[in-house]
Image (cartoon, rainbow over all chains, first blue to last red; front, side, top):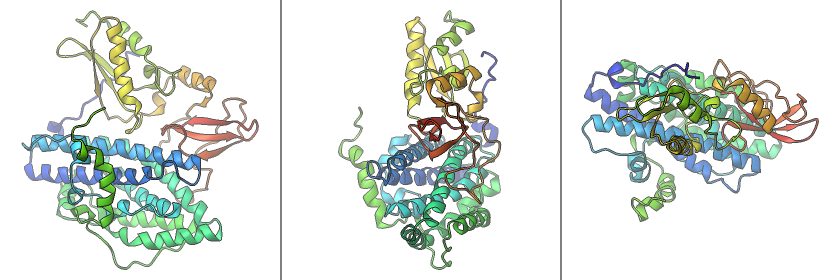
Length: 275
Length: 170
C-alpha cells in the first residue's frame, strides 16, 4: 500500500500569474458554479419526507447531498481567491448563509419552485444535461483547482443526469396524466433554459485564458441530448420564445428570497451558532 | 518518521480505520488514503480524497484517523486532495469480496467514458447486469439509482426477491 503515488496538490503558481482581473473572473466563475447546485439542493431537500415514493425521496436527498458537496468545494475556492485578492476572508458558511438574494449567481431555473414531481424532474434534467457539459469542459481548465473540482463533480453529475433522463422518459411516455404533467412542466420551465448558455464578458475572458468555457459553445450539444430524450419521452420541445434571464447577474425571481429565508434562518437568527 | 512512526506502522493504523458507512472495509482498502508523510511540525500527515464531494462521512473519517494515531501516542494531521478524483477502481479486490459477503454487490470496472443519456432505456440505466450478493442470480432489477447513500444504488433480486445495495462503479 505504501506504493500509492504521491498527489500533486494543485498550486496557483502552476497556472496563474496573479492577474487581478482574471482573479475577479475566476471568483465570479466559482460563485456561479457554487450557487446553482446549492439552491437546487435546497429545493430537492424540500421533498424530504414527502416525495411520491420512498426510493425517490432518498434519491433526491442523495442528489442534493452531492450538490451541497460540490457547492462547498467551489465556495472554499472562492474564499481563497478573495484572500489572494487581499479581501476579507470568507468561508463556505459566509457565502451560503450571509449573502442576500442579489448576491447569488445561480441560474433562475434552479430556484423555480418544486411544483409537482414532473416539474422537479424536468427542472433537474434540463439542469443536469447542461451541467454535465459545462463540468466536462471545465475539467479541462488551465486552472488546476477549477479542473479538479469540475472533474470530481462531473462524475457525480453522470449519475444525476442518468436518473433524471430516466424519469423524463418514464413519466413522459407513461400514463396520459403523467405525460400531460410533464409537458406542462416542460412548457413552464423552457423560458429559463436560455440563460444556461448566455455568455458575458466574464465568460469570454475566462474562455480566452483557457480557464473557463464559453457557454454558447455547449448549447448545440445540450439541445441534441434534450431532443433525443424528449423524443423517447414522447414530449414536444417547446418553441423558443421569450427567454427569462438575470440570475447569473444577481437579478432573481421572487422565489429565491423565500428559499433563502429557510436556508439562512438559523445563521441569521443566531449568528455563528454551532453544534 | 521522526515521531517514531514508520511507514508500516502508519499504514497498519490506517488499515484499522473502517469506513463508517461500510464497516467491513477499511479506508485504505477503499482507496481514499492517497499519501502518508511527515508534517512540518513532526506529526504524521495523512492525505485523503473524498469518495463523493458531499460524502458526510469524511469528517468522521478524519476524526477516526486522528483518534487511531492518538491511541498509539502519535499526532496526525489530515489533509484532503481532490485530484485525481477517487474511483472505485482503487478499491482492493479483497474489499470487494468482503462487500459481497456483507450483502452489498461490489462495483464493476468504473466507466471509462462519460454517460450518454440519448436513447436511455428506462430503469435499465446504462450499466451491466448486477449479480445478487445473496443468491448470485444475475436476474436483478434496478429500483433506484441512489440507495442508502449516494455511492450505492438500490436493486431487487428477481430470483430470491431480496432487495440489495449495489456499490456503484465511479
